[in-house]
Length: 200
Image 1 (tube, rainbow, N blue to C red):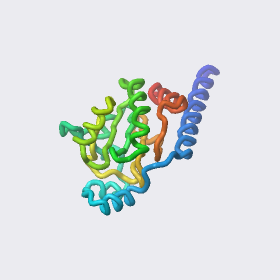
Image 2 (image 1 turned 90 degrees about the vertical axis):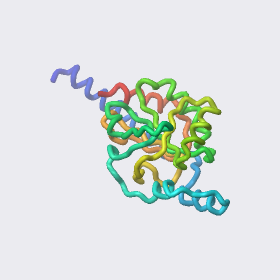
Image 3 (image 1 turned 120 degrees about the vertical axis):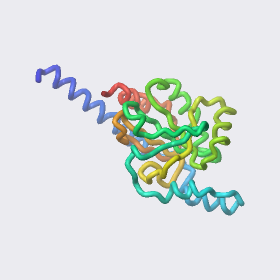
Image 4 (image 1 turned 60 degrees about the horizontal axis):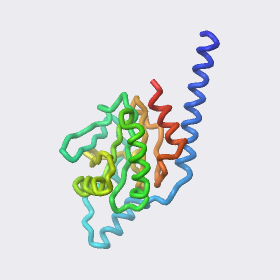
């Protein structure tokens, strides 16, 4: 290898380290999340709301490979993560009743405008109420595709709080998992996603 090739590889590795460090820092600086999904289920049950079995399953599943995960859109079409390999994937687990989820939606919407052709956005309504979630997006004029889980969600994707965002690289490997609300228009996030999109 010549000197230019070595410099190119070193720069690429440095950018990768900077990106991962930035995402790690963002993950550790938590904003308030909606809390443990188990607690939210209890409080909903106390208030008389019906808790669906699907939401309970989300909290109880064991880890499964990413290519086994699938989501259903409002038309009933199922999308699996394995079918999205080759694209960066931005998965956001949220609910219409969750204030931090709602607070971060405008920045996610702006992020999608920036990366619409390069990143696959999967907004997963953890309550499995696709009609309500889709109506919420339309009322607020968000151009974000809503899905519900079509398979069990492993705990390394969705732990005890929403919102939770998972970012996968083009090979389907998880590069970031962020619990709690964020401003996704932050320059370090945009820069990190740009690096992921430009990577081969």
